[in-house]
Image (cartoon, rainbow, N blue to C red; front, side, top):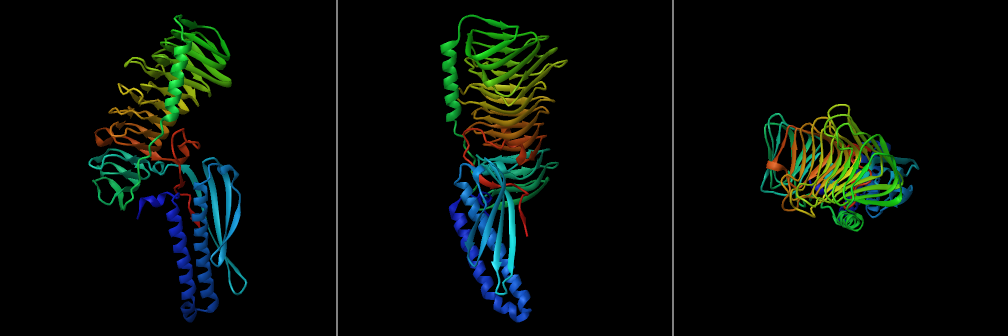
Length: 474
């Protein structure tokens, strides 16, 4: 078996499949005479034509997946019928959105008695890189051994090198590796070694993020001032830019509208105990919080509540190695909730202490290579959406200490950069170049395609991938 069969965007595969189908159709036609000799003519002909209809339906699926691979907009897909071999296939589509579509291919053959024989194949296609079809994907060092230590993967695993599923660990579906590598261990798994070409680690194009960082740094340079602002009353932005040295909020206040808050140094959004309640509600556009150094959301202990509604952008320029973008929640009578936020740090992001970040994009850059990482930690901390690190650090992406993550988890480290997963719960897909100490410890990773955002974040090239467990045929 070739792991590339999971990807349906290669014209050569489609051509080979179509040729094979035509050969099989011809074979079924040629053997019908012998079948007629041992069965009643009507039942033998019906069997052959039913089989032909199935392979025509399969040809329709192969043909249509190729069309999808060349189409950037799936929302305008329509039903269509094509003649094929001695019959035809009809493609029916439903539930189409930009990155997901339900497809049914019905093959039809009309016999000499005038009766139609029909078979169908139905599936759901997704527009995601093939690597995101696995619970765990490891894609860099073939000279290492990835070990699952007291960890569970509910789904498939791909290991570019050797892997060891240790006692107490489990891979519920298939553990794949190249045919020149091996998977061993006292844990529970089903191994499948596959032939070349092997599935490759997808590399994110960082251009979009680098351009944002550059433009936001320019905003800070152009609009920051030497004055400090403490915002303790409601603030309505009207597309304007507020510049300062440090920006701090306190009291029971709202920030609404759209525009920019730009600080040469730090932005602290209710970062003190007993600061009150802050609600950020963008309207008519986004609200951008751009800090030249650190940006902090939420207080460390008591009596502070922060809610950021969709349309909030957070950025830490991290001029010093100790600077960070920190999202946290106090222990008592405190909440920190962010929804559909866009969170970028030039150096590092830390989400901790039970903070809730939903349907958001988190991105740590490699513009600087000192002390840069993305860390999600602590019981009660939940993050969903797209979690992306391109740090070359070890570790450059950390999920630990009972934190819960859902969505697309990605770490590209080129020749360096390691992901640490330790005592964590992850739903979605984890795709990483390499894992710290070549080990995943005390964690549960559950593959769930519905947890992966329908629209992928900027920078990923997609493949047309069949959604697991969606194949249905008759």
